[in-house]
Image 1: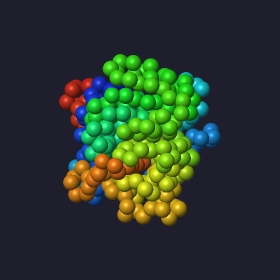
Image 2: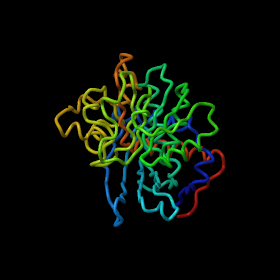
Image 3: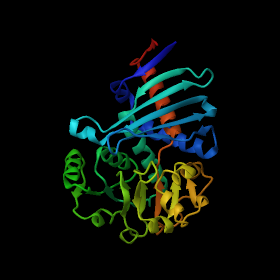
Image 4: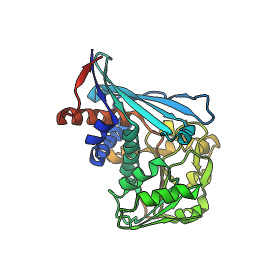
Length: 323
């Protein structure tokens, strides 16, 4: 048996936001159309407090492509000066079930997550949106910002983090941008934005309903397991809701808490793929608050990994090896 092994360097050599946007859009549409299946997420944990890992798998039937992504979060790694997050993606042959490729997906996962945000935000945010607020300034935040800059003419960015040092580091990493990037002490100052992105591991609501202005779009990117929460349930209950996978969003995503309190029906959540396919409406008025919940679907991982594999083969940067 032979297999392709793609290192982080090989992935980075062919990965672009254009490729990521196209793969994520295809995944959203395929998921909403029932093209294949997204299987139940398997969750696990390690011995260190706060550590966790998950396995997300999917089949894209029309492409005959299957696979899974393994992701882990070990917060104590920061003290060891090694990444807290790690990911790998495995592609399998749809006819034989044999593994076709293994990809180092740590950077790929960050691109995929940011691409999901950007594709959804492009469909849902007001066309005149020009201010961006970040709640949470960890590793993922820079990817989110640079992706959003591809789809809206942002003029200013406000950064809030629980520990100000994190926001300062992110501001410094964005020094090449020809726009205003400010660190704010109060979360409410970041929430006075046309687009808000939350990228935290919070388990209690950070974003209050009364701090969000009419017409705001929110991308909730952090909740991907039971118990996580970034948004006030009153905000969720009054907004127009979208998700990568509605059924998953009420199990492990941001909308789990409002649903558990009886403030939300599952059919009130629209699959973003249906909006992209033109079979459901997105934003309908300038004053609506829209929320996109990204709990992560494996169709994204499978399709972006396939696009990366084909790009790497075409560029001659990867060859199959005996396995």
